[in-house]
Image (cartoon, rainbow, N blue to C red; front, side, top):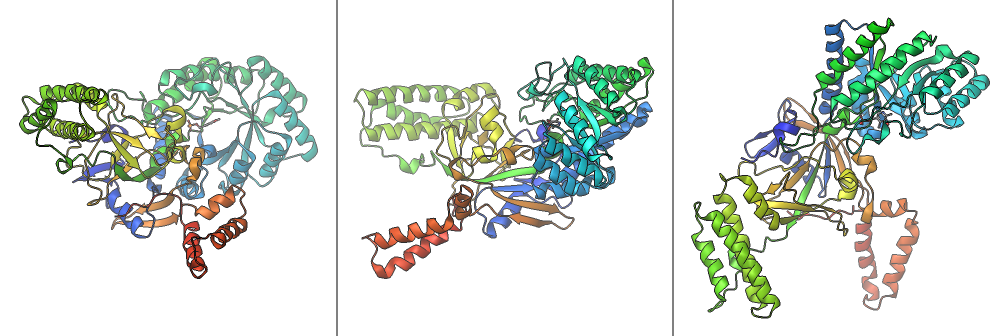
Length: 609
Ligand SMILES: *Cc1c(COP(=O)(O)O)cnc(C)c1O
């Protein structure tokens, strides 16, 4: 059976039971049942399902892995971690994260004023706050206020001018002065599409010369003891550990040298984020080539080696990985709205008393295709289709013949795929590449998978049902925006096969997995499709509970968000109804009521069953 790579990307979070994909936790509910349940409550469009237990699982894994490495190596520093808010700021994500991190003192990282205010409101006492990104004087003042509120806050400076602002604010506001971190520019970088944040040309960080200058400034203003942390970030979605090891050696040596130069407060190295997430569905092309244990062991080992060699104390280790924590907790479920070649059934054939010879041949192929001749027939059928299309262009066959050729070709391919199930996939994939079924999916790629649109990042995708039957259609996915970029085309390296379904008879949903990091806030309102309905699901021993349901915005709210005045919109609609010669005066009220109803619904399509 087709497992859609669940054994590679699924990390035991989900499993296939019978014909359905289920949450691998306690009562193991099927995603399909959860979705049907929510749809029965009136949410017919795409759904984002959040599973808080999967946030907790990742947090436990990170603290567990470093705890183990520290114990095994007798490492004497502390381990701390913060969640970078830019990865997902939504409260229905953040509250479960904070609850799960409480026992570890898990903190938050902020990169803007808005994020800092979230961190100042929700960070638990004693848990760290780190602040990265460019800061003006006002943001630094906010940091000082946070320190005054009792937070363990570190302002990480991205340039000398920020240090100058901190010195200025310190002289105005006095103690307590927040801890100061310094982001260093390394010559090591990550690799892959997200690696721009590291390296000598990166947007952020101080060069070694600037670092020495910063030391002098700190010393001159009696703030050396506030400089506690060295920070670097080599980029998101690190695919190999080698780059991190290089960066750690560089940062570790800088740390040791600074200690020797009198950085009395310096105690930690912050490796930033970057822990990778396995998104691939094809084991031949893994994206991440190391494990969390390896990451923890290598980090701990490298830093302890440097500390020993240079005779300094082992630094505390701080990490800011976000993607790794957030990605797996959310699943986007979208209903299939239409299959474009569903009409290609035997019933749709309009064969004539006498047909062109090639069509007769196609019909023969269809009737006599067997496992032993399937590949040959498949080739013949595609040849015939090409010839028939040429004949049509030249005016030798008519539209009915052309339709018959399309139908027969599709039917032959469907049969062949079933018959050829034990043959090498490559051959089949090549053929399938030519004949894809387009699945129209009730969602927006721009809104829900922006990293696919912007960076061609693929997310694991599979149907939620039918998993006990062989999928026969090579699928490309179309969203409901009217933009041709709203398509996930068939990728022969990572082929997606879906089922032939009769949507009048059954629901068919696709699940896009690991969409919990970055996608929600990056999502854009192209064509004015907004956030889907979001449901938080607590899986229990007996079943599951829908903890929270945040419905997708109503159309009138979307328009108001764009700065339309809802009242003006209503007045104009009413006026147009009043002025229309097609609407008799006695029906105006009723027509307006109908329009008004629409204003309160969301913008996604309604699937009927
Ligand atoms: C974006 C970012 C992170 C988080 O990166 P992930 O790849 O999500 O782990 C951490 N630290 C800094 C400074 C960042 O800019």
